[in-house]
Length: 210
Image (cartoon, rainbow, N blue to C red; front, side, top):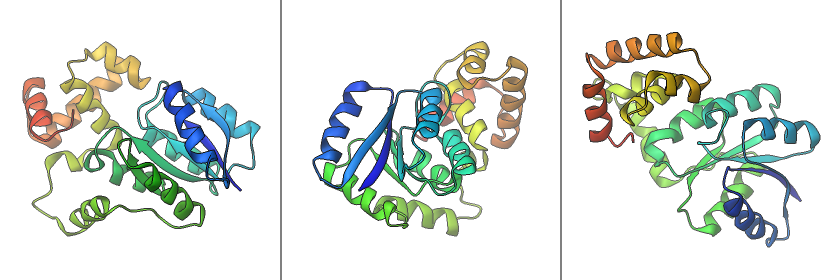
């Protein structure tokens, strides 16, 4: 039996996924969570968990950060990211953080079950689209998009800037001080060779970051 933690802030989605997984007869959803604090409580209360299915965007902390924390505290835990964001935005970052696979929420149900089996067996689950993205990261040099040079936190910040969030709102969402967000913004502008939020927003829209 594969014991799973299901973490997503939408209760209806968790309910449908739980039914889908437990209908297999060999996957058991032993814990659910809707935010970061609940994930950590569930992990403490269920030491025998084999795999965590995590959404990228949940209240409390960004999914990539959660992966790093979980892998640091529970090295044996396998993690599958399930997200509404396209693979070219977060998949590579998720795998680098320690996840074993990445699927978008519009994936066919049978692929989700396949991914869980593969990951529970100790292997990575890589879709053809993700394999192509990984290959691009290995072979690209000067042709790399500018945003590929950003750290995970800087990447989160540019997406929020482009979404029209104020500095104070970004600070609250990322659980940072406004001063720290200002530092990230300055680094982003330097790395992207830009001067204004308008330029960042235009770039983000042109490259599908939001």
